Structures are given as C-alpha cells and as structure tokens.
Image 1 (cartoon, each protein chain N blue to C red):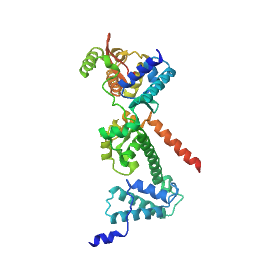
Image 2: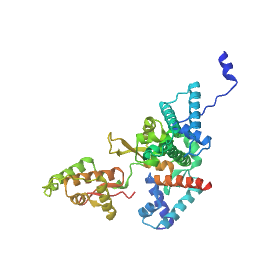
Image 3: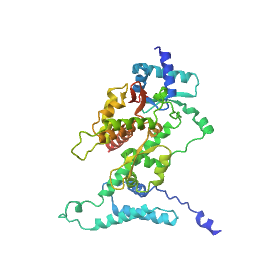
Image 4: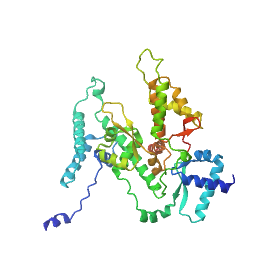
Length: 177
Length: 240
C-alpha cells in the first residue's frame, strides 16, 4: 500500500475507533510493519497541521487516537461546556484506588482517614472507577478499580505506569539527600 | 454594627484540610521532622491547637479529626511509660510505628494525586470521541443473551452428564484458572474458536459452569467477542 493510502486507511481506522490504539495494534490491523505505520502517522500529522484542521492525531500513553487540537479547547468549551475538574478529595481517592486496586471502601478510608462514600459514588458516576467483584471476607465488601476511561483521561498506558512514574520521582528525591 | 469593627482589623486564614491525615502530614512537613521519629508531644499540641482554632471559627470538623486526636493522645501517653526490655515482641514496639506507616502511605498517595492532576490537566484540552457502538463485530449480528443461553442449555443437557463422578468430592474450580485456559485458547487460535469445542474440553458440570462465566467475563471486559460462524457459535479475541 502506498504511503498516502496507508495514511488514509489509518485515518479511517482511528475515526471509527473511539478508544486509542497502540502502534502494535495499528500495525496488526493495517497488516503492515510498525515503521510504515509510524510513517503514516507522521504523514497524517503533517496533513492536519498544514490544513488548519481542527483535529489532530494525538498520542498519549503510547496509544494513538484522533483528538481536537488543544488550541480549540477554549472555543469548544464555550460551545459545549467544560466538565469541572475533579475535587481534591476525588483526586485523592482516585490516587488511592489506582495505587492499590482492587481495593475495598474501608481500605480507602483507612488511607485517607475520612469517609469515602460520596466521593466513590461521584467517581462511579463519572465512569472513572468500577466495581471489580467482591472480596472473599465476611461482609463481602465491594472491590473498586480504575476504568479504561481513567486511562484515557490521564493518557496513561496502564496503572503500573503511574506507579513507576511516582516511584522514580520518590527515588530521585531520596537521592538528593 | 460592632461586628464589623471586631473583625475588621485582622484577617483569618485557617487552611482547610481534607482529613486528619492531611492535617498531620502538613504539621510533619511544616516542622521538618522525620516521619519515622515524630516528636509526638509537639505534633499533638499543634494538632489540638488547630482543632481549637477551627472550633473558634465554627469550622465543622468531622468525627475523624477527633478520632485522630484521641489516637495521638494515646500514643503520647504510651510514650511516657517506661519501656521494659523484657516485654514480649509487639509490646515493646514503638507506639508511633503504625502512625508513621500510615503517614508514609498517605504521603505516597499525595504524590500520585499530584501526578494524576498534572496528567489530567495535560490531557483535558485534547477532546476525543466517545467509543461508539462500532466494534470489530461490525459486520456480525450481535449475539443475544438468549442465543447463548439456548446454546449452553443444549450442551448442558447433552454433554454435561456426570458419568465420571461416582465418588463425590468437593470440587474447586476457580474462575481465574478457567480464564487463563480460555485466554490461552484465544491466544493460540486468533481467528477464533468454536464455543462448543471449548466447553467440551471441560469434564465436569462445575468446570462447564465456571467456563461459561469465564466466557461471559471476557466478553464483558471487551477482551473477546462472540460471533456466529459457519460451524456454530464461536468466540475470538477482540482485535480492535
């Protein structure tokens, strides 16, 4: 397949697919090498940047998808509205869940020292966390974990990536002493 | 009219904390003390001082703040007791150990929280499409739950007879095992496997039942899709 055709197929694929795809997945679906896919991706990137297009190919956490250009965010927000950023309590709870998933409510509360009822409900509603079955102890408490939407919103490839990011930072700080 | 005069000359700035751990970590960091060697006397005093101030300003503190205050006082009183070296193992443990462990964990969570905030902030301006209804099974008819049930029911009646189980033993079949098995099947035959084949590889009713749950689980997570092939109901890894 010629490069422009490959780039067009890639564009179609990314359009149909809402969830971001890795380079590996893309090359599997397009039945071509990852070097060709990369060339096609940069071809697309070039096209979007030169055409003054409102969208672009975006890579986060090693996954590619189509996204609006950040410079249009202000305009889109004025039309469609902007989702409110998470409250500190919600972020903190999300951090605990990402750290220790799958995790029960009481474990979360133990770490934060405050009740997590309402925060959990709002995180569930936003689709950032989900139930992951129940723990096999008396009371069968619900286990919580993060969702694919969580990865999409943070641009992480996996929860493990978040942990290693923070671990690296901690060791960096410790080595300062 | 005096009310304004009273409060006019000074400004109140009392930081608001998410919870007792938040406050405690703030105090530890403000005093620049080692998390493993907390001067419990000093920290407890400052903690209680904050609570007093909060009460003055009518700031409603949750019961969790009081619980932590009680814990701090308990630790403080334990520290006053002479340490007897002959005490059995956990008795002679530093009463602050549990506290420093929780504080350390909370500090790590705070780091992750900041990282998350940064990541989400960076990702926010890139607006993406919601994943639509279009899946890899775009050209297949979706398989209804009734179809799967009828299929499984027939198999259950026909093949699920338990001839091999004359001796009754408590049988443990874990979902993880069956999931592992199904995943290895799916990994080996990427073009898909016949559900019947997979189910027939199971020997007992229990295994059969758990296998069905495994199939449902992979479909639920989007790992695999059910589809109708020439030979019958099949399952394959969702490549998209």
